[in-house]
Each structure stands twice: as structure tokens, then as C-alpha cells.
Amino acid sequence: MAKSTRHQHIVPRAYLRGFADAGNQVVVWRRGQQSEQRLHISNVAVRKDFYNFSMPSGAKSDALESWLGQAIESPAAPLLKALRTTTGPLDVATSDSTVLARFVAAQLLRTPTVAGHMRDIDDHLRPLLHTLEILRAAGLSAADLTAAEMAEWQAAGSRMAQAHTAAGGENSRLRTIMRTFDGFATALGGRRWSVLATSDHLLITGDAPVVTLSPFETGWRGLLPPGAPVLMPITPSRLLVGEEHPLSKEHILRPEFAFAVNRQIAVNADDAIIKAPGTDWPTYLSLAPARPRLPSPKITMNPSAGVPQQITYPAISDPAVSDLLQQLDADAE
Image 1 (cartoon, rainbow, N blue to C red):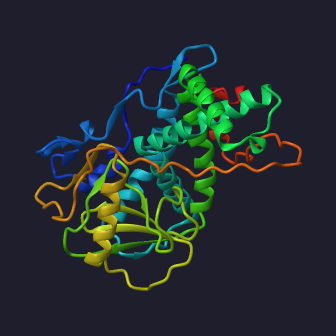
Image 2 (cartoon, helix red, strand yellow):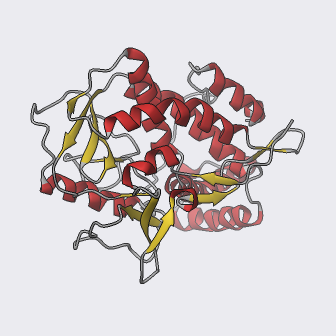
């Protein structure tokens, strides 16, 4: 039977406890607000119906919310508690490594920031797809048109995109997240994990608490750029690091590294950044007036003599994820 849990955490309380005081309170600074708030973790990073979806029958379900709680958050809670007093490389059992990889993969994907990125991509691509569809119906190829002619067809495609909002958009978003989770959990399962620590309170967190840092290129390179470490503050003085190939044997959290992580936490935040009570906000932090947006892509089209390929998805390794995809009506794609 479909359930109706509506008060849903985008950052679990098991994680937020690492920044909470004895009364389970943290300090929250929301975008657009001039003053901070001290709140119980039950009321932090919450969205209404964020993971609920429509089943093929039309009924609403919170099966995804329940799966996150039972399969991701509950197994990770004791591990997160232990990590708050850990320093150095993690000598964890294979089962714990899998639990950690799944938690980080889920937390990288389950945020409103990622949902916003997906809507940005949809806003960029949907007009183009409508344009290509009406060109196909007219028997034309985009590569054969002049720039002026293509501009006219794109205007028509944009009008069609505005008139036809994608049906089942939220289900589609959740399907994409679940498929990506399955791949990310596998990829992160092969990472080497360690905890960098310091005696000072240097770290904050936010409503998108897992970040990546890439020294190779500027600009957005995806949620999990190849070779980039994944980083998750777990207390004000401890940072979880997952690397493909650890580059250093030092496990001290340096202020300059905390600076880079905090800046990325603030950049990625959808609505709020979070700190422990009794600590100061880093003076270099600020929240932009609007949430993070993806840059407009540069799209080029060339003629192709190849046969169009049907879209196929990678096989799902997690049976529970496969079951959720069926509930999300994956067969409709």
C-alpha cells in the first residue's frame, strides 16, 4: 500500500549529529536571510514530499524515502558515529566499506542541488529535442539548414517545449538518480577511505554535504569527475576523504584544505549551510543570492550516416534499486 510520509530529510539526522550540540541543535544560515537560526536537527534540511512519486496506478508512494532510511541511513549511522573519533586510513571490513560507499553515493545525489541541475539540463535540452522532432516530421536535417533557418525552427521548438511540460518529470528525475546511484555506489566501493583531522573547528557542512575537488579543469565536470576525491565533512574537525589513489600519508586537516572544502560546500548549497553551535562562520564564506546553476551547454550538430541507436541503460546490480525503478515505471521510458 502506498504510504504518505511527507516530512523528508535531504540530509539525514545520523549525519547532522556530527555538527550538533548535546541538545541535537545546529546553526543554519539560509540563503537570503541576514541572521542565522539555531534549530533541532529534526527541522534541518527538510523538504515536503521531496522523494514521493506517482505509481502507475496514480497513487503516491514514499517507497524511496523508506528505502533511504532503511537501506542507506540506518546501516551508516553506527559507522558515522565511529568516524567522528577516527583519524587516518580506514581499516574497515568489506561490508562497512560498502555501507560507506552507498551512503556517500546517495548523499551526493539525493539533494535539491542535483534536482536543480537535472532541471537545468532538461531546460537546455528539451527545446532542442522538440526542434529535432519537428524537423524529423518535416523530413529535414538540422545539418542542412542555414543558421537563420535553424533559428526559426528552434523558435518553434522552444514554443512547443513551453507548451508541453514533460509528463512524469519527477518520476524521471528519481529514475535517473537511482540508476546513477547504482553506478556511483559501485565506483565508490573501490575507493580508499581516510579521515583527516585537526584540533581546531575548521569545517562547516550544508544541504549538499558531499563535494569533489578537481585541480585539472575549471567549470562543472559532473558530480563525480574521474580521479577527483570525494569529500564529506563529518564533524567540525574531521573530513572523510575517498580517493582512487591516495596521494599522501599525512592525515592532518590543513586550514587551506578546509578553506577549499568549505567554499565548495557553500557553492553547492541549495538553500543552507550549517555549522556547529559555539563555532564561528569562516569569514571568507558567502551564499550567492540564487542557487547554483549549470552553464548553458554548447551544442553542435553534424550530419551522420549511421543508424540511430536505441537508448539502453546499464544493468542494475542492486535488486532493491531495480525494484524501485519498476515502481517508478521505468518500463514507460
